[in-house]
Length: 297
Image 1 (cartoon, rainbow, N blue to C red):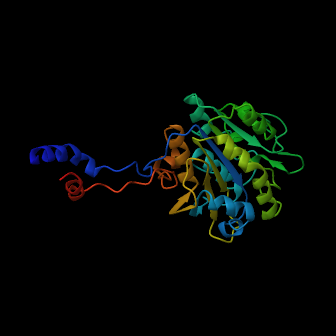
Image 2: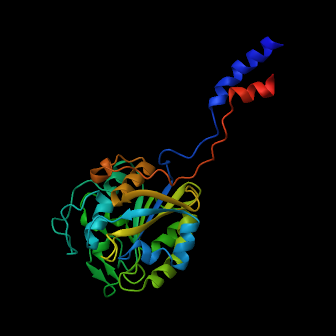
Image 3: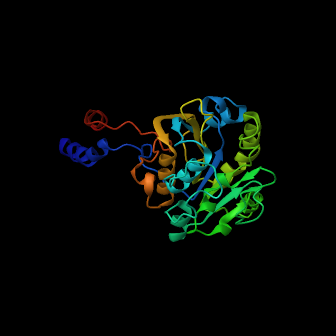
């Protein structure tokens, strides 16, 4: 009997060091990544807005997220290309453009990954306009327009997003740019929060069971050290989790690259991916030798 017990314990002992799958230690491969960019308000200004506060409570937020610089345009270029590419202002077109540096659009196309940018009040697909609808659309918030090595027809009016969601043709990577009222550039944070409440749920649903929506701000209001809110929302992230690590636009870009299987480039290549926000099964308590003996002696 004792020999049978020893044999059984020998068989089970390797299991004593195992547990149920723990929280992911890396960025998962995702089917869809949607990035929504708001404007010019700090972490503390926006996190208590009704919809945003509820989103944070049901998602994963970065408590120490920071923009790269001021003003807007270099931050958008940094999110897209991992570098400001020497841009220091909001001049249209960006000085030195069209750029040929690596960027998300070019990297996706090189790997056969679909992408689109959806911008409110963009007058037509691939439009090079600096402004439209008064100043509701401004090209400084659309960094893809500043590059010559990607397909500009992927730059779409915002209405195309609803059509793509309805047709289940959402690309793997999507950037969403509200207009200059809805992104809170020219209107109140309450206006922006209402826009998010009306639009983000469909994006989160459309991203599906293996996708994520990343909500972030381009920069703060110049009064909070460029401290901004970044939220990861969707089925793949932890609920009610606050990530304590300090991150910036390059960390977000690195995370996008890892999620889509892209080789990280420029500032993203040396930035750490954000890995603690992803959901996973809680680890089961490991069995010990003593516990096994108790059950099988």
